Image (cartoon, one colour):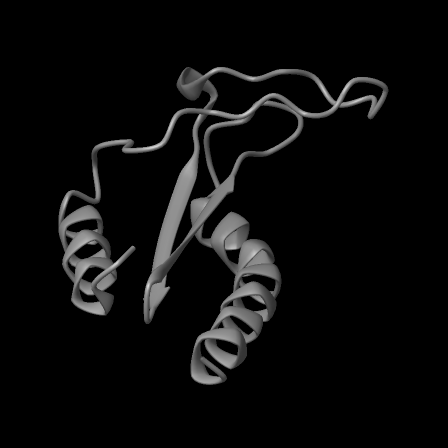
Length: 94
């Protein structure tokens, strides 16, 4: 984003609508052995932003279950943190 404040505004807006999926489900790569799951199987989303960049994290259980969302978020957080940390370093060097 051109204006660093745009990332803040977009992330804030997205996190306010916690019960609405702003990003559609993603299909896994061919040959991964994972099934393509629709949004009806349950999904969690998380957003972070720094500078001109926004990080969107999506999580779904590979077996399609629709519960244990806190556990799903907990499993997703290390990857989201690693990506966000890298973005923060990149943006800080600019």
